[in-house]
Image 1 (cartoon, helix red, strand yellow):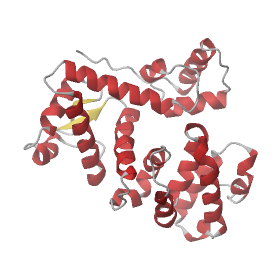
Image 2 (cartoon, rainbow, N blue to C red; image 1 turned 180 degrees about the vertical axis):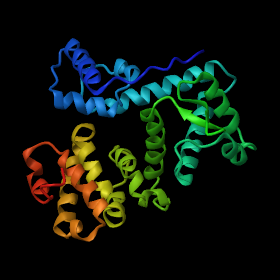
Image 3 (spheres, helix red, strand yellow; image 1 turned 135 degrees about the vertical axis):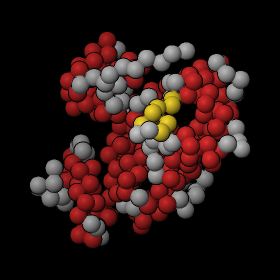
Image 4 (spheres, rainbow, N blue to C red; image 1 turned 60 degrees about the vertical axis):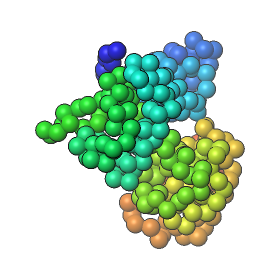
Length: 273
């Protein structure tokens, strides 16, 4: 099996491709709605081609389906089971999160996983090439992902599994850099309600990012998250966080659509977005 790399669409090309697919499915999207899909699928021609064109907010299902098919193909072309490959992908995702790296070196991965099945599974997946492969960067062999949306989907899956167990001791949950990924994982139905108490106290940026994502992906969460974010604003959050975090929170608020978010929008600085 040989994986062919496709250049990403430009923003305009991706928007038009998405609108054509939705129109063929009997749905007419606005440019704003098409941009939501475009951003979540990363302007990737392959992922856009897999999107059915019917529902905004179902982009994660495209990514999940893509990952499942890639693991199935890797299993068929090797002696590894899908269960083993999936478990190893989760182990690598966990390792990446704990080591704060998106493109780990094979040397580092080999050092930590050589005595387990993980490294052998990783080599099988690399040979198939749809999820990740060996890439030479800066004179060393690293793990390169087919697309950053695929890379992030693997992390989101791992984070979601972790949150569902009620285990919140991982340091990446406190890191603002990972807030968007944690937010996307947290709006899944299997996240315990107590996680939001943890997020509110320890990394409130997660709450605002989750509110933005929940509008389309999990509307049932939106009302609760809206109340949570309004409480944070009323408690003076924007005055008590570093400027960079405040800007990021205000940017997430700027992405909210609908009159129900008026209170949050009015609380932000007029020059922040």
